[in-house]
Image (cartoon, rainbow, N blue to C red; front, side, top):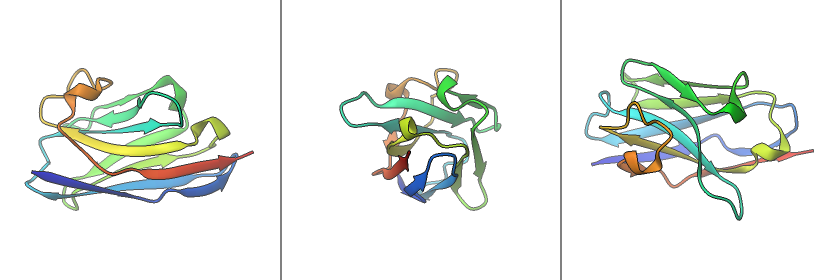
Length: 124
């Protein structure tokens, strides 16, 4: 069992940056793919970015060129660096992981465990 705790959310003005972190505890997750999803009010939870155990990455079009996902297996953390934020990036951001995710990184059902989420609010 892996537990995930997200942090780093908050309120930021449009054009600003935030760095989200996801700390994993429990069994070793180094072999799992890790991803970030987000859910805005009244909308479906959507894929943001993912990183495989070999550090291959996948990104949604919404964040291309602005968001960067990375992982530190020694520290059991996954990070989402978000730059040039827009009001439409406002959502609760969730960290997730799974053993059999690749190559379907965008599929929520592929992920076995999820964090509780962290709120990101971008003001215009």
